Length: 427
Image 1 (cartoon, rainbow, N blue to C red):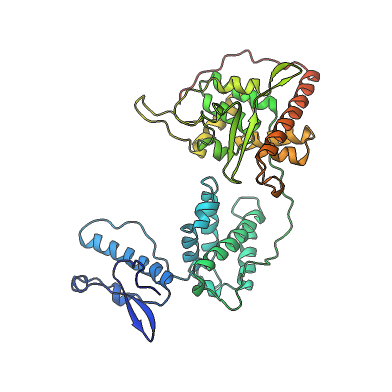
Image 2 (cartoon, one colour):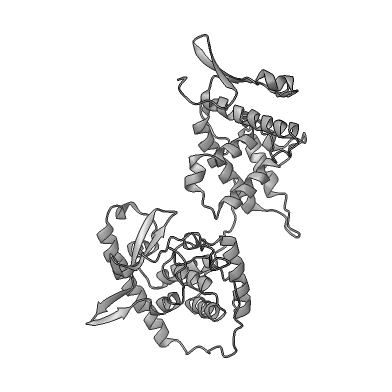
């Protein structure tokens, strides 16, 4: 191990039998002041650099708490986690690149809830699974944890919670694999195995995600605009028409420069952060010598948006001097709930349901698999590196979707218009 690598505070390296060993060495001045950490904890950190750094960070955190208390300051809320336990595995996973790159801000809270659910499962001895060393999590224990979570419902009237148990297994399997790659010395290495592989999970009927209709989307959009809330209105329309995930819409991935920009004046650029795909949706085309606007009503909704920042969907500041911010998905969800209640829309109306409604319309328009992917941004190796081909397919798919919509509207009865006024609400 190269000595050039940076070491955490109080860590010293020593060559022993041709190998470098690391030790956490509390300075004498703090020992004389009464700090007991060098007596209460193992200070020999081993020979693995990464493991030594992780253990040192835990000890340094405990030292900082002791030092604050010595100076009369309140300690930072912190829970000591023993290196090599399931709690340590989850904490390490949350600091890994795998977490940063693959777990979105929208799903992170759900993952953390599942981690807490697994960690707080009590064994027959009364010990938490979170305090159990990862080398002691065998396939038998993994099967037992799955069954324990599944058969211990928390909602009144429920006899089991198979979905929560299934999420626990999937999360543990992936977190185990990600952390084992980073810290192989903490796991059983020969042969490498994952106790969560092969957990037999009960078959269950997957519920179909709700999908709202075009009429509901625009009833919501115009009602929201009438109530003075153009951002939720435009967000719903973008999710439905251009199939962008709600978390990307609210994170500012749809920009003013991407909407009829200088380089693409007849298109809107939709970036799908989950898949890394970027789709240029055609907004108009010349058909039989006439210009046809594919999303005329959607653009009318967007015309009500004020330019608050780089993104179309931005949260206004509290005062005129405050800079606009991107939306928190939970805050936007509360606005959507209030508006749908005000407008008499079903409880299933969400931004996610708007996107699924748009996907449903693609299926109803009988697009080919390639045309559907060209609009939705879903990945396929057949389309990698073919920007022009994808753009042509997107135009053909948009024409086909537009023709389907026109045919439906031609045969549909005229909807009743809302006559009562809607109270304008402030942010």
